[in-house]
Length: 391
Ligand code: RFL
Ligand code: PHB
Figure 1 (tube, helix red, strand yellow):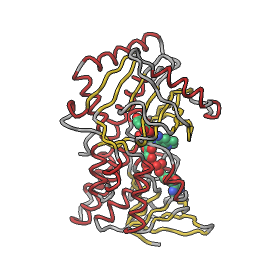
Figure 2 (cartoon, protein in one colour):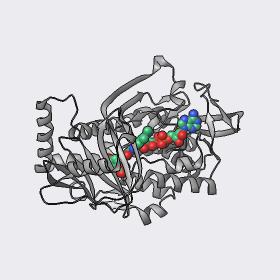
Figure 3 (cartoon, helix red, strand yellow):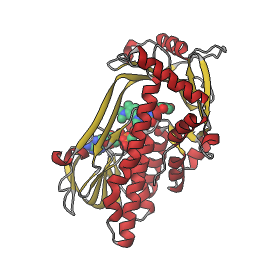
């Protein structure tokens, strides 16, 4: 098999990249190790920044998103049993975010790709990236028990944190920056209307809690838990009781319970691999960087990377210049590090760490009080949450 751009991975990064290249008249082949149902039902992110929404719409993938997505103009911060709203449009010249799940983004992009664009091969596992530093990189892969090779002009590794693309970088050229957190999130899906019409981020002495949603009928909720927690150790009743404690307010706000349909634990990690390019191999999305989910940035960062790559390759096709491809890593990393900083700040602000001193705990409360009381502090949060510009 031969193509211009070999794309490893059909998560949001790989799927959107294939679509953007198709729109630009550049052919690609997507290799995905899992089956279609798995990719379409993997529960992950829920918040799209304005810039992500604009990109999906311009790529022709916005029809259902525009119908079913829920526009949110703010979030609520909750601490010391008090509620504090952060209004996005008023603080950011009109920006907002959209609640539209990653599962739905993937379903829309897969349907488009299979209907209109180039090959998308499920259950096709890339085994390596070879000859990345030449003009003819190759991706050996296995499908239906058979070995095959995808020959490309460029390879984009969109294969997530556990993928193979990153391992093709020579170790002497690679640098990894990493932090793990001593806690994770226990996430549930529940068949009950969200108890609030905006997301609620709560800091409580017992730990962080987040109220989010998938639709007007389905709630998504998270609890901070120790990093090694097994979701099976939490009964449904225990989850609801703990959520009630952490969301409790002085004004009688109530959390509605409902049947829990899914329960799992997500670890928390910050990670950046530099550089994001080696020869004709480019990394995009979680393959290159991970953020803890508190800032809702993971999916949005992946979108930024593939937009940057598609623009750079289109520029080369139109002008013959490699300039933007050469700048790819530096361009992406500027935005990545802003998102890393924001996600780290949101995480440490809202999660009481088991090893934190009483002094540090009080500092975090003071930071929250500053955000509640001061417009400049709130503006900084609103700008970060609604998204850092692509350029
Ligand atoms: P993905 O979505 O991980 O997709 C990578 C794809 O590559 C495939 N793959 C391979 N295919 C072929 N050959 C190989 N050798 C391959 N190795 C892997 C995988 O099967 C997969 O389909 O990465 P992408 O596209 O970069 O997208 C990034 C986002 O998925 C990610 O940033 C966010 O979902 C992060 N994230 C969350 N972000 C939020 O903003 N809010 C959340 O609540 C949230 N929850 C999560 C998350 C990430 C998680 N991970 C990665 C474990 C929960 C989890 C569990
Ligand atoms: C989600 O809805 O899954 C979600 C929302 C906001 C976050 C993280 C996860 O910060």
